[in-house]
Image (tube, rainbow, N blue to C red):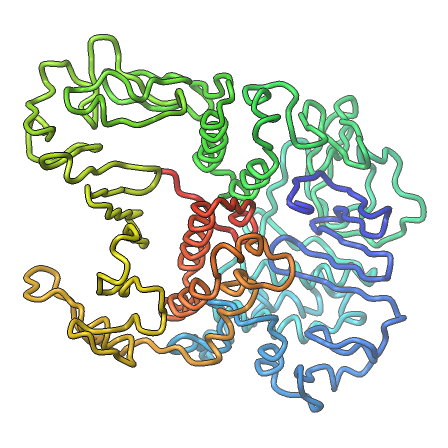
Length: 595
């Protein structure tokens, strides 16, 4: 993915300033200023710099001054330190879940296990003087690779994947300097599964012909590397092998497989949503969809949720879209006695007492509609004589006392309860509105007639934020915890609420707070640059949301869900103030859950 867009390799960006291509099993990023980064998509990264930068860099790869004994200098130090201390000093940020030390006891490797992993059946193959790397030892000292291999394999209790990664890394290092490596893989030991019409070679051409470049690049004299090579008569198309006659095409320096459909501006001029594009720009939805599906490893349900979100938004905006679901793509499963309709009448034929309570003023939306002869009872489609009884505008289920939504209760419609999007909404005749998202957010609203006439956990509604934390006696408290305790419901019988922690209370120190205040986390709300929330700051102050986010994330050990909930709450508040914020879910990796 390049700039949030899936592309086939090779690719050239910024008029050749940056290129990305495949070499062996590696993705290689090259820049015009002499930096090259190679990544094997798993565990090995190689960074190469031009000699122009000799002695002018620092970091995990050392200072590039030709002296190995001073490479382990920490970020703010001048003397080499132990590897663990050195590595921790160069960590980019405090990332939740990434620790300097082990949680609990660190895994240990006793001498017996270490001896086992040093023999030639394991890591010993690396330094075996008669083994497959014998011609490399003089050029790449096997000692470090061997020690790293033994440590990693022992720590992971002999896991073959770890062993294979270690040996593969040494293989690449040997081949990088032109040393010959003999075949060392077998069907039982670190086997390689190549895709159809390709096969494994221990010394494969690093610059093979590809569909975008049928002849190998001129001046390419790179040493060979392990790779899966296309069978005779076939050629690389992106990362797959195809017959020569099945190559794709190039458009604006981008390569596309044969049969691959692409739209230069991300919008299809045809298709089920074409009529919506002029009403509702699909770009944000498209980018969110690509990000979510990629993050979910291609999960179809995630793709369907994203397309359904755009379909809903289009219909809500009045667009006349076409059928996009099929029995094979995102089929909608409707309950008994109902069927799928692209434009379902959601106010539908309902049981008595329900028909006038289903507000949907946007015409229609896709959904399940009751079959002819059946009516909606608030949950399923039933025959009309199965609706049950209606008393005082209460609608009961036939077999119980649970209310179906929406419902109006009491004389003169004292209370109405309905479902709106992901939330349940309770509205009282005197103006109180309570909404709850079934998860973490409860919002209470009162009309201005109650100004300075209320008290409780939501404050006194007098416009003065400095006197909110008063106890039931009207006394101003200095401690938020004591204030919350004072409003606890008395005489709790079920699920009693404790004033103190049952075990050790979680704590949040200044160092942790600074982590969660960074612009990659809660600080995104007040970031100075590239802030998608900035357009709403004049309408909704971000500081209370920031403080709440930092506290909650700290108490929950950096749980990403807390960040997403806070950002969702802020964007919802902005939406109610008439400000729409787009693209934040993709930017921060927050999937929207559609219920």
